[in-house]
Every structure is written in C-alpha cells, then in structure tokens.
Image 1: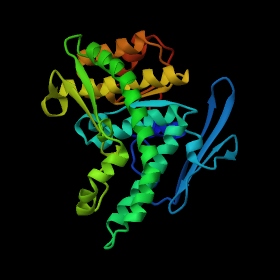
Image 2 (image 1 turned 180 degrees about the horizontal axis):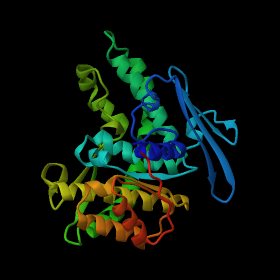
Image 3 (image 1 turned 90 degrees about the vertical axis):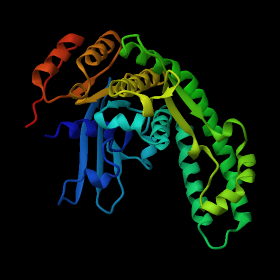
Amino acid sequence: MGKTTVLDALHFLCLGKSYFSGTDVQCIQVGEPQAGIIATINDGEEVQLKVKFKRGGRKVMEKNGVPYKRITEHIGQYLAVVIAPGDIELVYGTNEKRRSFINQILSQVDRGHLLDLVKYNKLIEHRNKHLKQEYVDMALLQTLDLQIAPLAQDIYAKRKAFLEEFSPTFEKKYHLLSGEKETVKLLYNSQLGSCTYDELVVLNRSKDLAIHRSFSGIHKDEIEIEIGDFSIKKHGSQGQIKSALIALKLAEYEYLKSKKDILPLLLLDDIFEKIDEERALVLTQLIKNDNFGQIFVTDTNQERLSAFCEEIGKPHTTLVLK
C-alpha cells in the first residue's frame, strides 16, 4: 500500500499536478480538509519545495519559501517520466489522450507553447459556450477567431516539428523492444495540414452552428500508431500495445533529456508485473545501457525488484511499504 502515492508525489513536485488523479481533490485523503507535499531536492544545491492544496481552495506551490504566482512558472525546472499500467490509454484511448501526451512534453521544454495552449483552450471554451446560445453573434465569433488563428498555427507548427523529431526515436525504441522483429509508425493528421485556421472556420461555419461546437482547430488533431499498415489500437496484440507504450515513454525521456540537458526522474509503477519476461529483459537492458538519472521503481515482488537493481548496476535503496 502507498507505493504509487510516492511516485505521484514525485510527479507532483516536477509538474505541479498528479499523474494518477484527474483533480487535486482526489489526492486528499477521505475525511481530511487538505493535503500537501514537502521535499528537499539536491541537484548541486539544496532546494526546498512545498505543495499545498485543500478542498474548495486554490493550489499553492512554493520554492525555497516563495510561492509561485502561477504553477506554470514551475513547469520545466524538474522533469519526470512515468511508465504505469494505466498508460495503456495512450494507445487504446482517444486522440485527446495522445494530444495531452504531446502537450505535456512540449510544455516542459517550451514555456511559450504552454502559454499558447492555455490561451487557445480558454478561447475555444468561450467560443463553444457562445455557439450553444440561442442567438449566435457572428461578429463575436469573428473576433474570437482573429485571436485563435495565430495560436492555432503556432501550436500546429510546433506539434509537427516535434513529431518529426520524436517519431524516429519512438520507432527505434519499439524495434528494440520487439526483438528487432517489428516496425511501427506514428502518424499525425491535422486539419491545419491543408488549410489555415481562417480558411477552416469559413468552410465549417454551418457545422459549428449545427453541432454547437467548434469543428475546426488543433483540438481536433489526430495522432495514431500503426504497425505494418494496420492500426495498432485495432489490430495489435497485448504485447505489441505494451511495447508501443513503453517505447513512447522511453522516447519521451530521450527527448526531454536532449532538450533540457537534464536527466529526468524515471518512475516505473508496477511495470514488471504487467509485461512478459522477454520484454522485461529488453527494457532492463535499455535502462542499463542508456544514460538515465534517478530511477524509482515500485513492485510487489522483492526478488524481482532486487534482480532489476542488480542487473542495471546502479547503487540502490529499497523502501518496504506495508
């Protein structure tokens, strides 16, 4: 009990939010009014981090006793990559899951991209609320679209450039995990690939009014994984899907490390419980042979955990939670 909570606290300290819960309130123990995390980080100099959140109140994050005005100011200072069983939704789930995955990676290396996403999402939310009104003011829609257009183009351009750089690393990691037997492709389809945002809203005006939602924009982008010429989501085996998931996360680690010149934390949550022995051995060798920083691993099997730590050859400490 409590193993995943430790990893989630580490993720919270790096990205200012839970990895395993959709809201901060879900991280508060039942019957308690508030929760928090206090940590000392040593990366050459000692840093004190504190996170406080309570029911009905705003979250506060402090570094060396000084609160951030916005949590977004903290993003990118400390990096973490999580591999957990629930990540299977990255492959099985909706395009929104995969867009969020890309957004989170880019936001850690490009603060401007993070701010653009926040602005874009607020404007689209405003636009959708207005489209649900009985009377739709076309002049207001046009005003919103003038603000949305440059944000949409910039976000699209950065996603496209990111995936062009990220995809070869993902494909290489998957090829190794499959025992060099299989290849995959990461496909990116966006409405903005063939039209500007301004052109799209004119083309889709009647659809917007009919469905009362914004039909055009980067919030409709599609990211799919193919094995051979088939969708891995529809035709992949359990083993192939798990390999794709791990490859995505290892590629994320590689990308963050190269862009920030920082070794992210690698957080492995019960991962060896969910993959077969052959893939576990390949993953262990990849971690052993590559340049990783601190690794936090949870497992219910003490012997398996000790064998992993011995194999990768890093000094380690075991914490037993009961």
